[in-house]
Amino acid sequence: MRFSVAPLPGDSGFMQWHDAMMMCARLPGGIPQEFRRRLWLTLSEKHLQARGVDWSHAERFCFNEWSNPDDDELGDQIVKDLHRTGCSLFCGEEAEDNQAMLKRVLLAYARWNKAVGYCQGFNMLAAIILEVMERQESDALKVMIYLIEGVLPESYFANNLRGLSVDMAVFRDLLRLRLPHLSRHLEHLQHDAADLATGTSYEPPLTNVFTMQWFLTLFSNCLPRETVMRVWDLTFLQGDEVLLRTALAIWDGLAARILEVHSADEFYTVMGVLTQEMLAYGLMDANKLVHVHMYNFTVVLLSETY
Image 1 (tube, one colour):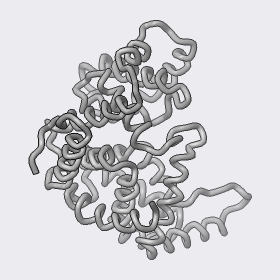
Image 2 (tube, rainbow, N blue to C red):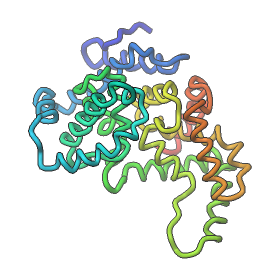
Image 3 (tube, rainbow, N blue to C red):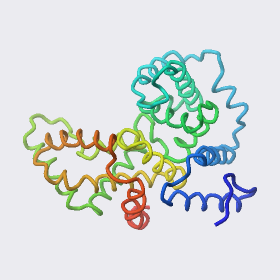
Image 4 (tube, rainbow, N blue to C red):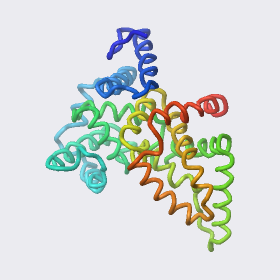
């Protein structure tokens, strides 16, 4: 297939380019690093164009130097999270300047989308986007808008987390369908813990505690950076169903060790260790995750969920 880094004019040119990028994302190694910035930015600008956004006006509003009534409170929330941004861009000699840049982008998005404002975890998303956008703040804001409003379901980061709650419910159903042995084992652990517990406090499903954080951070808190970039590329191209497939692939990869666990407390302890191991060493090769595991779940997602 012939294609260029940027799409040719017209809808047909864009679709050919999109198909070519999809093919490229599935190849060993995925999207080349030098293509990634253009890929994310092209998709984001297409989204903004479709919405009829006057970017020059939006940019002036979002990055204005005048203080808005909500800026102080938002700024305090953002600053509390900056030190937790586990990203190389925000360490070392330039950390202070880079954190100020990250704060500007996060504040700009809060001004753009007042209904969402700032949510915990946005710092991790924006930090990765800034790295890929080569520290261009305006481009980073475009990508963040597209990710949150054009890729992820509506209300994913709203106060009630309605969009995320839907994905979590869908994921639990998919886990029962595709990994029934693991799902039954986790349900047994949950029931045993409930029988031992006193009081009437609600205990969320065991998978929620970890999977919800994976979804909110788009796996940046549990997978090595190379693998995260592969997942993000596919998510930008295909939508949030990629998050469901990736989570299934991860639980599939962890199943053998989780099936040896005998209590909910032991499960939490083991998962804490496994999460650190995944982040440091990777659960599996990125190509294997994309081709062997993730795409094994495509049929069930399309036929039984969507």
